[in-house]
Length: 524
Image 1 (tube, one colour):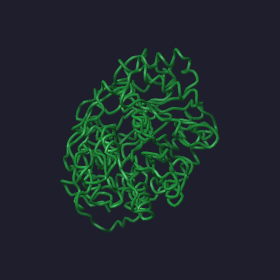
Image 2 (cartoon, one colour):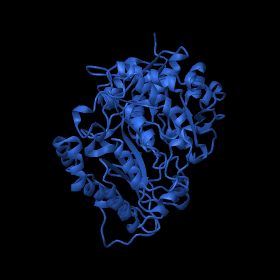
Image 3 (tube, one colour):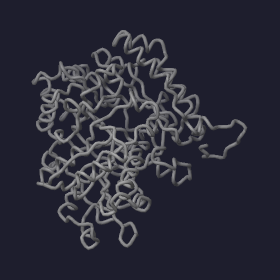
Image 4 (tube, one colour):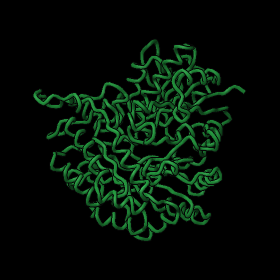
């Protein structure tokens, strides 16, 4: 039977992660390819998933594989687990779609993902190899398109939730809704795990983050990432997560306008855990933006995991806000369920900067006490920080770094603030005329072309230089290495030392000449 739609998970890790790509960056299961494939399969369509990122295939090999499958439609699913991944992965996605069109101009390409939701008209104007874009999460829009089974204008004009070119001019059709809360278990009915490639056993081509596996490469696979909810009820300026909830046709989508959360039922989600456990997966990421926000959903799910006896065998991590980790009882529950790590968005060590970035929607808590409470529950923390938030100067960034040393968590992550398409900061950057990356890969936090936003006090190169130096300082910080050794052993410490030998190239830092004076907003 001919494949109706092939879901393609493209990537270009070398360009995005530089020297980290080979051994250190995670290779995560393609969440939205899995969700969309299962949703369309449940409606009777014949589907497939092609993951050249996991299979480490180059463009030529990928084109050959896609042509062999010969699907009616090729849907490039350009998401990722990090906030910037939807834009960053456009680098590999468009390179592959161009090569595919050059090989066979009649092939039909659909693109869905956060960058399309943020800038659908720009994508259609810039990328000739893309025939149709879906303008939010794409569940209903794709179903509409598959039912029509045509790319003719006479048919496309009535398909809700898409963008295409009419006589060469990009246009958007009437917006489509996202899957509502009461239809989550029905219209997003799980993950098509069985369609993923593997080498020797299921999910062995995927690997966790380095720290998640206690800094030991052999513990990173098999691995899977899973959502129990979608979206976030907050609207931080620097974040574009909620762009997948978009329900309008503004030329530039702004995620803060679509803040909402939707949940699968715990009884439904536990069945996905059952499948993964049966497949032999013990290392898992719960990808929810705010897993510990709503006790109504996370509490019963954790109890189901404990009842099944999974908790003692699983190594999971999940996100939490610093102000939602309130009681020892809740921490004891999630630890028994198998959550051994919490990712906390601490963002800044300066209270004023932190509250400004989150629009004051985070409770002002004693972060040191929160970390201690988590550590007392035998849960490790990966602390996330941002350098270059609006209001930041060298003193406030130093406060952030000093706080990170004081907290001394077993994992540390920091980004230089960027104007990610779909975020409020992106619209601000456009309005103020700030220089933005001129390539998709430039939106990677780790790429050579990265260009952060300036602040009133700092130039982009200063922020990026500080971030990269802070990474090295923390990962060679003796109290941190001592903690890692006590928790995970000498092998983990040696692996971290090897990681610090990798130097990222940064054009705006490496090519800077001190004698040159720059105007406001210049990011050279």
